[in-house]
Length: 288
Ligand code: BEZ
Ligand code: FE
Image (cartoon, rainbow, N blue to C red):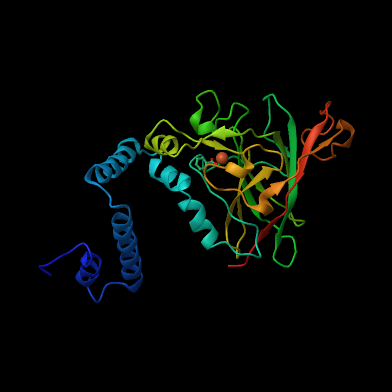
């Protein structure tokens, strides 16, 4: 096409694509360019604004590394990561939620009843529940990979003062599907905001806070792997999570209990002297 105009450029783009390209790639590229062009037409995007957009992408690329994923963070705060999650989440299973960039693979085994709090200060939280299938039957041998921040709001991978696997554990459940561990009550924290994503947040008048949460990746052979989070129902940031990760079924009450009600069979049994918090959160996995 020689006479490309602002009105026909989208169709011209589509006409340049090969007829024999994979249909899904064709669908995605057509739709992406349609929305991109419509966005520029609708907003009458100026050269300066276009340059700012390019500078944002270059800024993300400049600080991207094995330990820092600014593009994923951009997707998170724009709501794209959560939207993709929700598009593929099954209504019969526990909702999925963002993975985030701070999971460290290869966590050491944590026995059922184990403790992740160790010497750290702060309120003891007992987290327990059953991993079930969609018919309510426990899934024997399911594996649950758990991680969270330390009381200073930092993940082990962000904090030189923590061991590599501090507040990370990998638990394999028994025939009853039951998991249980003690930890310190997670705290709310901010996502990194010292790069281009922070500039976007500030430009939109937004804060970088996430409500406190525990992260789980739950796996069992023959089931769809679930990446999810558990939030306490009294967190001040529940209704304004900067990465849009909160779902109704992931919000649980942390009940305060007297030390005398701390259960037997845990690593901390007999060692709890003050009231503790307890949360019960069952996880439902869908068959593959
Ligand atoms: C997190 O929960 O660890 C997280 C999620 C998205 C962006 C940053 C952190
Ligand atoms: Fe997190």
